[in-house]
Image (cartoon, each protein chain N blue to C red):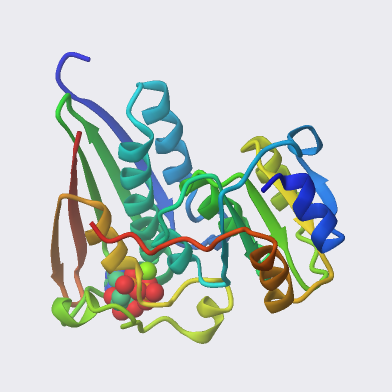
Length: 118
Length: 140
Ligand SMILES: Nc1ncnc2c1ncn2[C@@H]1O[C@H](COP(=O)(O)OP(=O)(O)O)[C@@H](O)[C@H]1O
Ligand SMILES: [Mg+2]
């Protein structure tokens, strides 16, 4: 799914990464516990979360994710957006709640991922 | 790369905002050195969990990453409270993290299991009241 499609489906605002909206994501992870995200294996994923701290960005970087969506109308502080910009991530914000945001992406064809276990 | 390249970091235990910075830096170094995305992810995620643990459980510590031709070794050392029951701490979901840490997105009790999952070898040495040292190896 293209990131621009996510923006349409979630009526999201773009907080950074305007030049990368043609990028494609293949899976999604909706989560507020960062270790659960870190147990997740898919590449080219999008992270949906209600948390707004720098560790959200660092977690996405660790997992080579492409895009972060802040749900429930949350806006991260400026330094968090700066970190994401430096990392080349697209950051979006939507008023949808976590459940609804994930559901909308899922029914439109964006799958979940698996938990890694080698 | 002749033999060994060492990266050393002091992890600030007072400042949660910076927790994870060293792991982001290692990720960049390993990328510059040409390692595969899979190797880089395994090293940096394992180190990230360990770095966060040192901040939330041990008031900081130090991290060393030693890069060899065939393997990458990560050593995390702290002078925190130590881990009294390592077997219990290794169980998925076991956590002594307080609620304020959980509201920051950590404390799900998945850190040590993730570190084990992403590395080829992991050893914990810990003494209550003295501190903890964790050795991890990722084969290249
Ligand atoms: N460096 C450390 N120093 C002291 N205790 C630790 C350290 N790392 C982990 N622990 C203990 O092991 C438990 C499990 O760690 P972990 O699996 O990372 O879960 P979490 O960090 O979410 O609590 C922690 O809750 C803590 O009690
Ligand atoms: Mg942990």
